[in-house]
Length: 200
Image 1 (cartoon, rainbow, N blue to C red):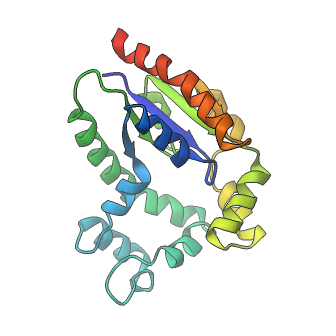
Image 2 (image 1 turned 45 degrees about the horizontal axis):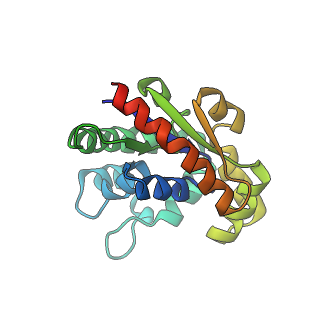
């Protein structure tokens, strides 16, 4: 199987690009969705997170309070590293199960926001990066998550730089324009992905 990753900074538009690829037949494995799955109430993942960060990151119903946890990890690199050490192995294992279950010949794309930060780009055959200017990320994130500009900048800074992501990418999708422009780029990319999978 050809291993293909899709990455991009926070609020860069990874989900939109992934949705467009799915419309064309790709099997999407989204690390963000899996990261939610592995910390659902009653899971070992949530128990480990609560053990490390305390009950203050739990809601009264026992579910994870993501806003409370976010305030901790985005301002504390060590805390962020501790959380990643808990979550990432669980996500990778679940992603591997889904990847292995895909039909032969399927274009399987794993959406991994922290691909560069975790060094996982080295384990993939091809990498797609969704790119936007940093200020665009800050503006979108502030609006989407109701954050102050400083909070949004801190979250953007906590990730790899645009340059680092582009450097490891085989293909770059510029999502700074309108949606029609992005769709055209996905249209151009899709036959290349199909060809790469067919060659294996």
